[in-house]
Image 1 (cartoon, helix red, strand yellow):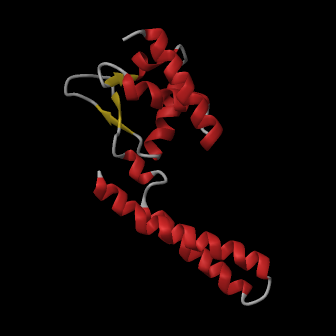
Image 2: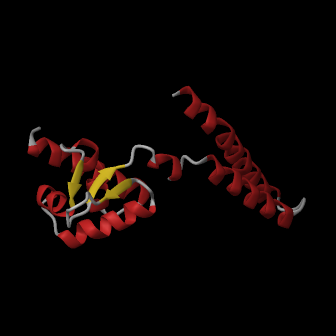
Length: 147
């Protein structure tokens, strides 16, 4: 695989995650790289060398990605280095978990109770947000089943 093309792709993913989700660019670059690298699991040193960045930046990115469940970390027997890989099922726990939307709808309903019948404009916005979250909580499992 062409290293320059891999770097360009990783940079594009890094920019996307920085703009869309506020991730540090290096975190998005790691996601992009792990999605296309060969072999599929890489050491921290390998990732840092390929992405032309420091080990500490990669370590910080990996910590953040572990919290999001977007990567896996393994250590083969007899080795001293962890291997990092992309977790293809991690997306279900980062914005694609129906329970997040159920919980948000519940919280928003609590806000509606506080507003009561007054403040129509604010109530309308919360009602719309409740509906959207309930819709997503209902439809996401159906989307998963379709795959």
